[in-house]
Image (tube, rainbow, N blue to C red; front, side, top):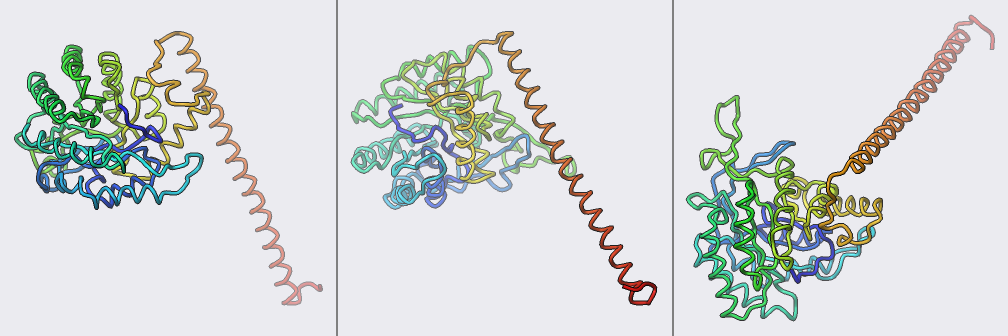
Length: 393
């Protein structure tokens, strides 16, 4: 996409990305970039509370795009706060954090005209900021399911084509080189993947990446005790995210990588909470990976942990760079399945051995404690006997 990331893991546009302070915290972590909250033309508060729910298996949100408005995310104060946070970041483990990370903005206007207006503002800021790395890219959100009264644009392929044609015309008129990404919803049927990719492939001159996937729309969670939804707005319907969507994300990344023009990168997002999750998305064809729900629950430290876990996997497998295994998913084979079973059995034995060692150590500790207690009791008995003249010491 023409964007340089020091690490291939960074934040998704969502929770903990709405303020300069939150973005600065991301900048200080191992996150490879900083992506701001999806902005509208004017600031807005979003949907009524409660609008977020989570469990170990999944999360749901119907935030309705609360944000501070596009001017805020393009302001010199916001950009400087993020850049200063990057400059002040310290070296951490084996990754030397650079003095520059890409700062990217996301837009999700209420209308096509809103998106074009914001996009022109971003282009102007980008052109002015090239010399001091102000804006590195823009992500156009065509996938939000949580704005009341607004459908998901990327499910209507005719409408998506209209939007991208208008965006393309603006790029031509402005002669802009601003890297453009598109946030995509999840697809579930082969013809839909083909229609989406076919539409996007017409605009390779401006679309540089797709981020796949956004939340799975229209999920519903019920509180059985109160007999009502856990989310207050939209009848309780909300976007599903977290671990439950990882397998849908893997499929979408793989399909998009197979169908999109090679010049368009795929950014994997959905259900990432570990280095293994990130590794799997990269194997399926992602060039980089975004983290959303885990960042919301764990905070920016998740980027340090996930990067470290991914590095460990790469070391164990002998990979030096992400390019060594990105989009290198192997076909199923008996040999591969057999090797995987053997590896799992070996890991189980190692875990059992470790547990046994812990148990033995605990038992040995118990024996020592018991002997100490016996000695103390005998000593107390002897001293008591001596005190009452029962024995001569």
